[in-house]
Length: 388
Image 1 (spheres, rainbow, N blue to C red):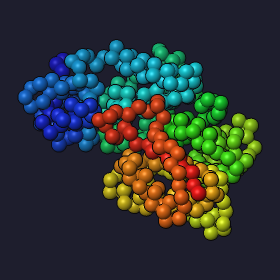
Image 2 (image 1 turned 30 degrees about the vertical axis):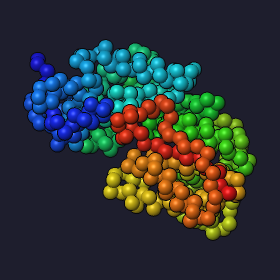
Image 3 (image 1 turned 135 degrees about the horizontal axis):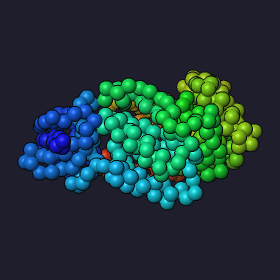
Image 4 (image 1 turned 120 degrees about the vertical axis):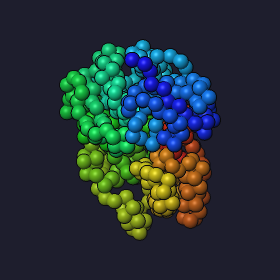
């Protein structure tokens, strides 16, 4: 069977040449007889070979580049991609078994996510192409890691843009009700089928550790989820208050606190905006505040409203901090740049009439490597500030 060829317009070449991985549907000159999910040969309108890619018959992202080289996308190719990714994780987290193993385009595996949680793996195949090779990926992961279980978390809504169903299931092995995992000295019990995303917010891993170095006194962890920040802050803080709207998430906080022997963590189930206003009105004060909200800007149209939301929570946090206290504030909104986020936080500081020392500007953990030519892969912002 001959290999399908997709021809792209000149308009895509500068971006691809710089190292971006995507070609959009409007940049396709001719898709020939390519089928959705197929690996295709990519050429420009002059006939020059440009690489090989996953082809989507449905998504706005018509091509997801896998390589610029004229090589086969076969079993050996994917073995090498997985090995290359694992080698990097072993280098940055020696001896650890909790990390993002495959970070989509950041690991040259566009639309494929794989996380490792101790003896279990979580896999996401988010495009037609990734879906087609899912059995091969499962086989290769089994061979390399011999996991107790592999969980398929294909409940991300982005799959609907590819015409794919949403599902989550154990695809092989036997999954424990709670999977033990660890980040350094902090231990977690995870429900990999019911947890948000794939289990933990692994992109914050190194920011959790950094926050733990600054925490002291009375600490407030807003949008705490399962307590990643709280658990890392607990050893240095007098007390940690975890605020989240989800009671099940707060139950995870308490279970993980017990697992680590922390008795200084308590939980509050409430809307973060409402609770911050109430705390401000009541004159409460904290030594450390962490803000780690969900993405307020899901698309470009939502950016103006998102900016208002980020300013509001940061303004309240500034007002609630004691002089010399620390604010660790985050944004995972891909459509909000680091410069925009910094400007919002600076404006909130000015409106709160607080003086601020900029201590650190951080990003996503190193197991989420980003491509210089692909801003979509660099999304997490984390600022650490000292407030006076």
